Image 1 (cartoon, rainbow, N blue to C red):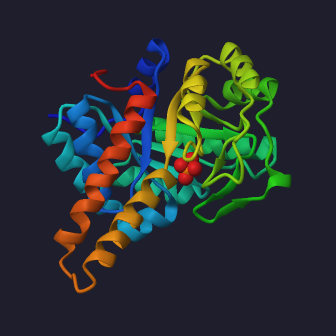
Image 2 (image 1 turned 180 degrees about the vertical axis):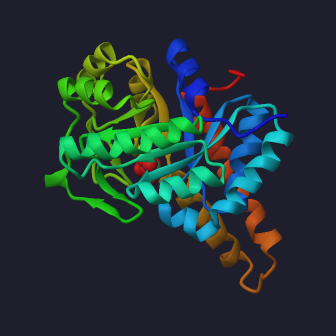
Amino acid sequence: MKEIVSTKEMLFNAMKKGYAVPAFNIHNLETIQSVLETAAKLGSPVILAGTPSTIEYAGGDYIVAIAQAAVKKYDIPIAIHLDHFEDPKEIIKYLDMGFKSCMIDASLESFEENIRITKDVIKYAHGLGATVEAELGRLGGQEDNIVVDDENAAYTDPKSAVEFVERTGIDSLAVAIGTAHGLYKGEPKLDVERLKIIRKLISIPLVLHGASDVPDEMVKRTIEYGINKVNVATDLKIPFANAIKKYFNEHPDANDPRKYLTPAKKTMMEVVRHKIEVCGSASRV
Ligand code: 13P
């Protein structure tokens, strides 16, 4: 029987072959459908990600059930991922529910504390065959309730990254190389030289957070230099909201969710198709 998978195999395949698997932050049935229908059509492995407040909003059990229905329907590897979870107890709760991939985000803690917390999560997650991502360095911007202002953002130090990966045994590493969550004030400046060095030193998949609003060519360059998972939230949320606003502007008396959500889904599908193309993950299954 087909099952929800961890991100282990899909990210290792991406690392071996030099592409990235897109991870889309989803919020409800419609975003999940838009992502999965498009990924299935294009033959792309895909990750559905949810931050703590999203999982609480949508219901972890509902997300697991929808993903289980989808794995039966589509012939692509589908992972559901806990994104930016800071509380190990919450991670354990949702891994027990059926999530097979998580990010423990202890990047705001000290180096030693980050290692300790991450190792604790890994012990539990690996026992269930689930994969663990962790972050070293600190990404600017806001994701969920985590806010990091410009002065507190910090790039990933390559040497510390090697020690972090060796001592924790994580499955993938989120690197801070100049991207930020949400929209950018100017053109983002990415430190791809730093990424190149990290890639040379580390042999597990690398993750790019904050990929929305980054020019396609820049994202492609990070993939060329070693990124294997690209996280997209804002670039899906804004067109979704805009399509609904447009529908209501044109149909002020509308009230049928099937009517106003259908153009929103179409708009999201186009974004998903485009991101899959940028990631180079089509026809990889
Ligand atoms: P964006 O909202 O910038 O796409 O960031 C998404 C992200 O990194 C989720 O972890």
